[in-house]
Length: 115
Length: 110
Image 1 (cartoon, rainbow over the protein chains, first blue to last red):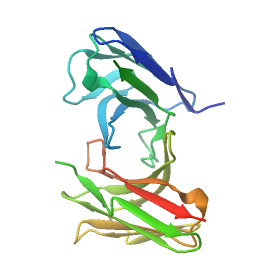
Image 2: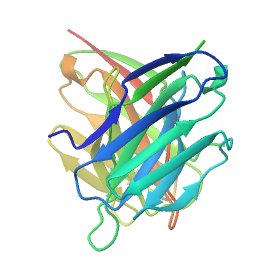
Image 3: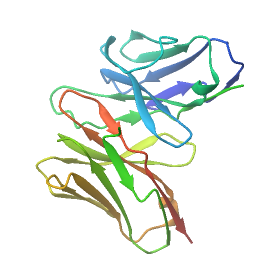
């Protein structure tokens, strides 16, 4: 009954490969996010989707492509992986609208290592 | 540059002592949140304080907000070894997403 689940938890791959990380939330939230946490623990937003619509797209290389098939899922596909893509990627969700508390619910993270 | 920035970067205390972490930010905000991250885990929401509030409590946590100084503090009283984690403040400006600071790494020694 995990609220926000993402897979895989660990991903080790070679430079130039393409990989995907999947995220699902069972909280009924309407907004989902991808954050990147670098080696210094700095957490930066990458994308935000509200009801399957892209609402935030920070300065992220277009090798990163999010896809939201429905409001409970937000996947992240990365093409042509580079060494600098190594990081922990976090999926999160929240519920906007009336009574929104602003709380973000995070998944456990997916640690990507590019060799 | 970052909106929120925690201070100190790292803090080491003995069990039973109080831990205080500070967060400074640059622009006016709607609200500010504190999150905890245990090693290798996701972030967990601790407490939210709105821009019109000055202080909030939740169990052993006390958060203050000074909008004139653009700063917030998180106090953990009677710390326990299980409080060892990184603590992040996140600020939200109207219409924008939350921006996280780099965090404070707290170590509580038994």
